[in-house]
Image (cartoon, rainbow, N blue to C red; front, side):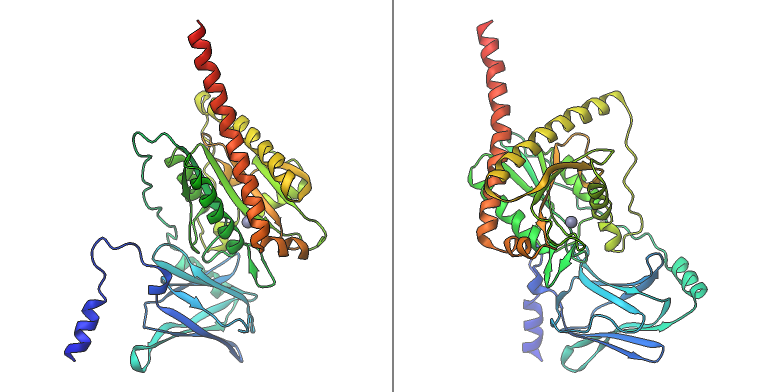
Length: 401
Ligand SMILES: [Zn+2]
């Protein structure tokens, strides 16, 4: 008894200890999906008993289950759908919350959503859903509608006396939002690996202060990503994604996107619309890009930012084009929300098409990643070198006067 108490006390984290890693989270394993008549049950084994909240959401119709941060170690062969459950996904939602989102093909109501205590301190998560009428489902959804937003952690301000250029790297998706999934590869992992490698490359030069919008498998709302760039007074914002085009598996190569109100082409417009839905994929309801602030100063800033974004985008096409395969139209633009900061030059790199078996192989290869990261690093270098050169030129002109 006494020994048990000591062990329990020993597990209390000391003050000021860094944030918990996934290894410290409760573990969920052994997912099961069973249908019985009008009822479908989703269950998972838990390493401990945790609090569970669940509610339904309409259009798209789904059930959202919120848990404390959980380490999902789900077996690969698990059943993916049953009855009116057409799909489900799971992952971190915020720093201290995880979500399971169940997509419904027909209206259903929550009969049970709980973590049962089992022997030995273990738990079992049980979600039981039953088919219901459309009207009843909508009534439930209206009742459950809650202020369902996340609050961004306050960003640390740029330290005084910092002379290095600030680059924000934004690996797309994460946590509950996997992005594109082809075979067993999720976009969120491909772009995180790329982002971390790029951070290492840029930091090695000693010239850049590099901030990541996420450096692990967690969900970050689009508005928060934009805000990181602005709060950090970033000199460059680089969002990283990997596209897919299931109806044309032979389309390949990397594409560089900048923001424009009108898309350069229909495919770019469609892609931006898809990427702009990332918040909805995580079950955020109040996700709408804030209307552009009007004003002459903002317009001037935006125009200048757009010019710089364009310069960097061309640097990227040059450098990446010299070492990896590019899409046949490698420079395009569309209304990407994540690129909307009026004061931060921002580009979005689609590394390639996960729908192309050849690209998918490259995207997961360390060798390709090394080449592509090197090329992006060189483009960053070129972008700031031009700036240094023009500053140097201005200084020389002053001396000559
Ligand atoms: Zn994406």
